[in-house]
Length: 263
Image 1 (spheres, rainbow, N blue to C red):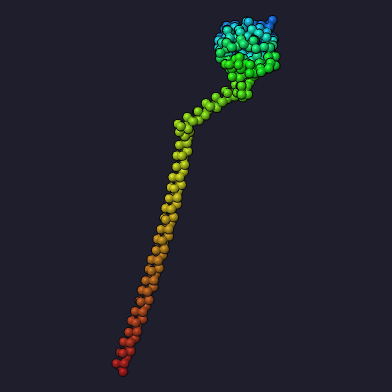
Image 2 (image 1 turned 45 degrees about the vertical axis):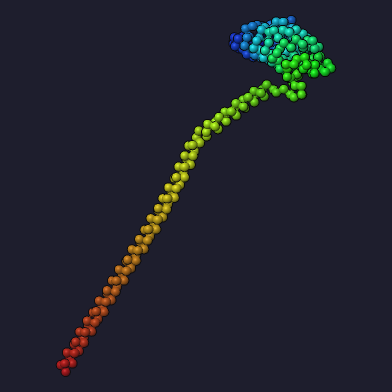
């Protein structure tokens, strides 16, 4: 067990450790070894299947909340727990040699104890076992993983996940209250710019079409003016020719008159 403790420390000081798992390492003479009061910050301790028979050498661990002692050969001496670990909330004694209620009675002094596991102990064969334990230890909520109404105890990992999910939900709500996420306004501005650009493009197209139509109208007007000029010139030429013909006719008439006079 000492060797296992040194491995679990990982170059840390005992007072820096909050969790310690010593499962499956055999202890000497059924007693705890290598643990002392320097592990004062320890909150979780697991010594499952280490052939532990006595808790007499358990150090004072005032901050210990969870203690795993399953699959050992403990048959009594549980009064040490209230003295050394007064703040325990979870205790697993399943698979030990606990046989009667008088042994469990010592746990009454663990005022903060909420969950107790005695599964696979001989005491579970007693008549009205569950009712008797709940009556004896009125501070506990769960026995062997279930409450008095047979509701299963929540898993500690699930509780942690729920807490994390709750924190995430709170963060999401805070973000929603604070306003839209970063970049939302920029996207709106980009959309506005695109709309403005499309409007400008449409305006430019309209102006261009108007300009082209105006040019066509002006060109048509110019063509009409050219046609008018051409018609005027043709009429003047015809008038000049007619005047010339009339002049020649008058000249011939005059000559005829002179000839008539001579006769």
